[in-house]
Length: 211
Image (cartoon, rainbow, N blue to C red):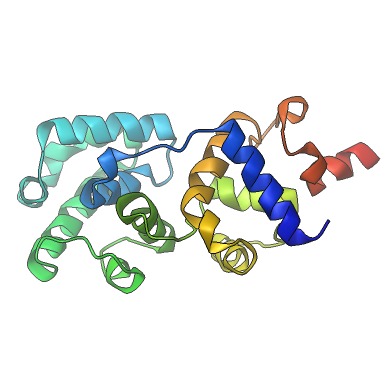
């Protein structure tokens, strides 16, 4: 089986296993803020922080005009709340001042925002604009290496290799499917091999079987 066939099978089985999710009703600004909150924390913490923030502050302008100290209790579940509160106010102000209140729909524009790296930018493209991109977080990086799709040390390398390997038609769904897979089955510790639909397609599992 060549690599393109493996990719097709992997994506097909993940599609059968999980439903794609919609975050913040697909609103680009809320997706951006949520993704900033998600940095270095778990999804359930991000859910709580994002819900609490947007229950009190409904618009970009309201957040841009807010004292970051007032946002901190709302986003506390996401961790690093001092830094993140300041960051989302800075981002909101820059969007209003330099982008006419519109979230950029391209990598170049997104990377101009304070604290926005490639993973965050790609998340906004995918979940906020439905533009094909491959956000590489810890799950995508780990799973891609375990499966043997890539052999990389850093997420930026993984993104580049996956872009070469994975057909563009899969890009929008790849992150969400792999994140759910990484949270439920292909966990960092104690992966659930007995439940895994990708056993026979996984280099990591095959190596375990050979030992």
